[in-house]
Image (tube, rainbow, N blue to C red; front, side, top):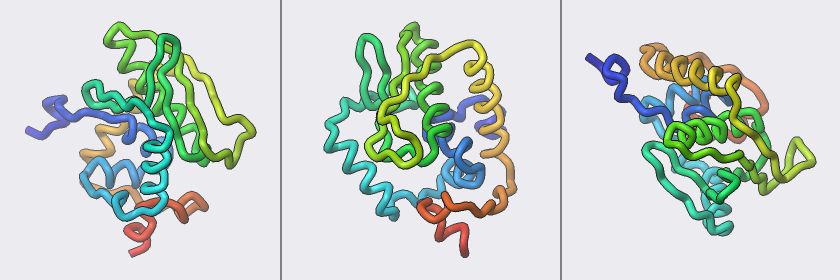
Length: 168
């Protein structure tokens, strides 16, 4: 019996982000193939987090950058994939809601690339809770699949920590 069958596999916000961003990246990360420690862009993102002096809080299997009476705040280096960031933030809001903590989500962007706004506000609702439930199920199916998703080349691949792996 594998972890998927026992339902012990814990989905993380990073996996949700990667699933929206790139299924292959999600599969690789979910199967413990981590290329991020070699990525300069990831190192820059971590340094920016440290510089912002986030109050990173770990609750179960999620790490939250900041939380206040009104907002759960996620800080991102750029808005290169705002949709993936949005789902990661909504996932965190859902996890908190399951613990009786209701907040709005605030996404703070340090470097604007695609949008003119540095701050984006999101609220969890029934529709995106249902979407997240489906995404979590799809992530588990993807991760426990024996087949690595094929490479789907796009501009976003150039800055990906897994780019060298995918181009072998």
